[in-house]
Image (cartoon, rainbow, N blue to C red):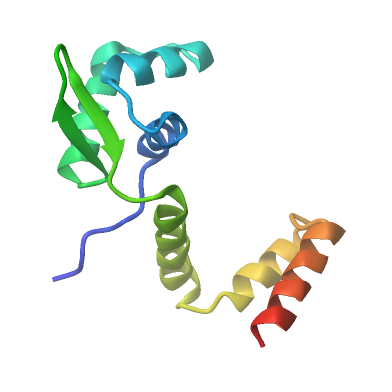
Length: 124
């Protein structure tokens, strides 16, 4: 049996970014931030945060009036895992085709390319 995916859906990632930004948050806190960006139902946010808790991306504790959610893992750790899973799934574990694709489609600026070259030299 395959291990559960660490990749977050678009909506889950949007919620996680809010919680990472706030450090800890209630459903109401996240709802109000998302509502500034787009129309969304409070119950949708509540359901998504419950799912994220079940998937162990969030952990909750009870305060006086509501659950307070905190990320169970740092943002950089989750993103690293998502990128690794993407490269494994799409490029059979090799990051080179991903970089080639980004360079060919001009998604990397000259500055990005210089930074990548610097990181490669540094890790060699």
